[in-house]
Amino acid sequence: MKMTRREFVRKLVRRIHKEAETLDRDVTIMHVCGSHERTIVEHGLRSLLPENVRLVCGPGCPVCVTTTGELAAAIKAAEDGMVVCAFGDVYRVPTPVGSLSSCDGDVRVVQSVRKAEEIAESEDRDVLYLAVGFETTAPTTAAVLLDDPPSNFYVLSAHRLIPPAMEWLLESGECRLDAFICPGHVSTIIGTGPYESVARELPCVVAGFEPEDVLIAVLACLKMLRRGRVGVTNEYLRAVEDRGNPVAKELMERAFEPEDRPWRGFPTIPESALKLREDLADHDAIEIGIRPDYTLGHDESCICDRILRGLAEPRDCPLFGTKCTPTDPVGPCMVSEEGPCFIEYRFGGG
Image (cartoon, rainbow, N blue to C red; front, side):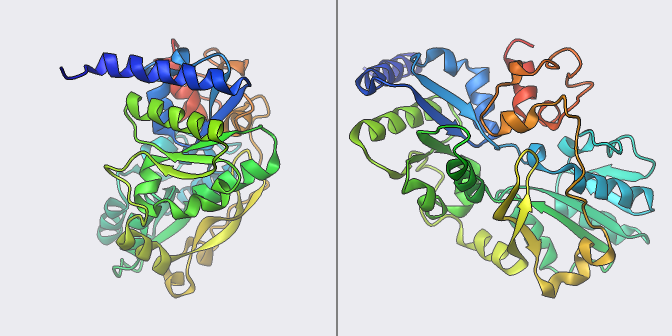
């Protein structure tokens, strides 16, 4: 008889508890994906885990790690007369100089970089696209840049790379980590190879987004820890190939090059961001003076930075659900649908 989904989940949970018992120590597993956090909270997966297994979220929300300096640069561009295009998740993120939603300028929410390009084609004014996202969205930005966009189309690249952030988290030692669950969407683009530097130190498991996927990844991490194994295990074979997506990777390689850059809540992480290559300088917002001030701070009462580094949980923040809500956010983690605070507020009991 075919096993039901409920029976399969129960079997997974039993096996997770059995593996955890053999370890006889506390284990911390970090994921770096906002979609994973939503699955975990929406389905109450943490409540199914043994007491000695802790599942924490890291910097898996691209909007959350975008610095206030990058957002402020886009705000100033709008106030100076440019048409600024950005994803909806970025629109209401607060900064010391306001937000894109509150600024005195022409800011338009778009769902893709192609839409921003279309706006540039129909406008006499300069158009700025604030390019936020990890390796998942960077290829689409690259494709437009390499396809002879209008001369009035500019990109402020806030694209960031996940593996360098994982390396930083491991090397910093701030949060003692035993294993990583690697992001499924990012992995469809980059494959498994870029995780190998981290995987030399601890287990890394690529996971999908169903509750069963996350539980299977937790089980795989525990099995690797029990056996003393490190390396990358791909548990998302239905979508992720070890080589990744060659076409998408080639587009990124042709349009961008890695750059040292700070993340919100993090210091400068080596080669963790993407800047436009010199042959695309005609569309680089930096070249026309739109330069982020990376020293620009944020509300010190907000603990988004600690949450993104696995050092705190949303409900540890004294502002959570009172002074900071999705309708009146203090930090980006309560704005983006991939933000851990927004997810906890919406799916974790408000």
